Picture 1: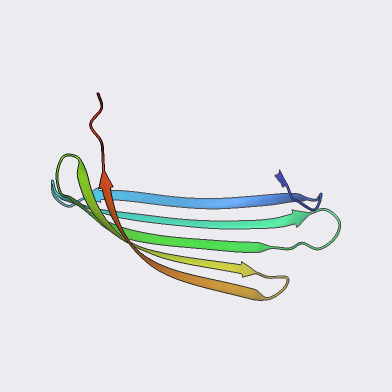
Picture 2: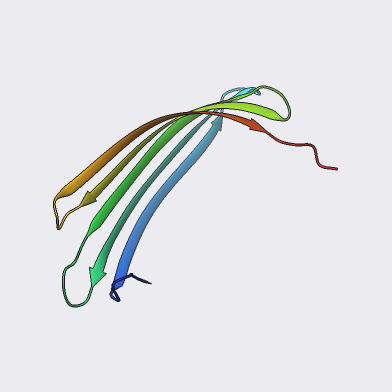
Length: 102
């Protein structure tokens, strides 16, 4: 349970899956999926909201300190009470550098 901005309490359920797998010493795969469902409880509108995230990726280890990552991200949001749905697709390219600690 968590409070909302309208003074009502909201109930939230979440399922999360995260997997990382090394294919070799220089390459790895990742996959993340999350499903959230929130709804008002008590008197009034239930205002149910569903949220889905799916995010597969591949990571190349360029050196001990540097990686190059490619990720695809799909997001879906569904507000059942108002009948609105929104979908989003993203392609991400990231360069990750880990500075040397002194």
